[in-house]
Image (tube, rainbow, N blue to C red; front, side, top):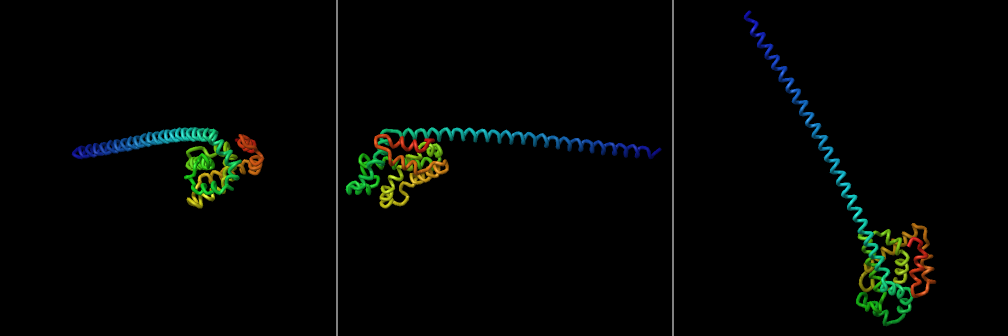
Length: 224
């Protein structure tokens, strides 16, 4: 009879141990569930953050492209101003003769110090140097420039080679580098498009002054 209380206490201890094991198991399971829910929430937040970041990048890229296109439109508007058209006519039809004049040639050596009203080649050089710089920095869409203005760029550079050589002799080899890079990129564009550069130059050579030159370059480059 005296052994019964011991057995009862042993049973209670066993029951208590089982209860604690059950509590521990439940707590462990609950902790695991909390960790799983936390991980799922974190994954969802990361996914939403990624989608938001991608949407923001897409929006910024759209705005960037729109800005570059607007910049290209402004460039083309500048190319079509009377001052630029007149300067390109001078380069294509009068510059070669002027370069035979000693006084004019001497003033070419002044580089940017020459009178731009007389040395209209400076107007063309500065214009295409500016466009080349914008394209190189990505401020305007270069492909749009190649499509619209490649003929004018190529012809102008070919006509201005002697002037550029003199300017580089006086001011350094890097002078008009943006224009030169634009020239080579335009040539590559025409070649990749299957357009013969000789056709551009031939039409320019046979064109007449007073507006025919730009028409000639655009006929030689169908996409312009």
